[in-house]
Length: 156
Image 1: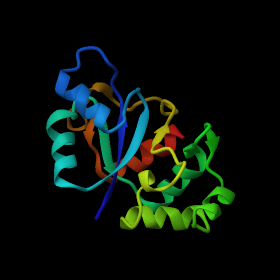
Image 2: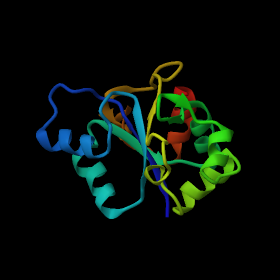
Image 3: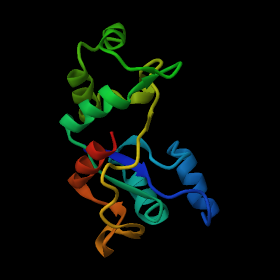
């Protein structure tokens, strides 16, 4: 089972009510917020049909997930996610947590005090295309597969 990283790239104006509801369900309230979701048919349908004009997504690999957790992982009180806190909740390292997340044994919602949303920055060097078009039409929106890892590393 794959683990998708979904990043919101477009803002509020001109969003249909069903898009707003889908973004709310995924907790993508602001631009450059990212969440981890499982490869589920209902999630995939929501991304492809409803949100393809507002988000980009793809399969995240373990190395990128470890970096994302280290640099952008937060706990309650807007404090950084640390190895000490991971040991307190039952994980020895960021690598172990990333492996458990990718394999589907645990989700961020199950971990006490860990925030499920990552607040990213705009990518260093800017976007390669426009954020108004799909990835296939020289844009940035939609499904990008494993290329999401390159984008995330530029947004950390």
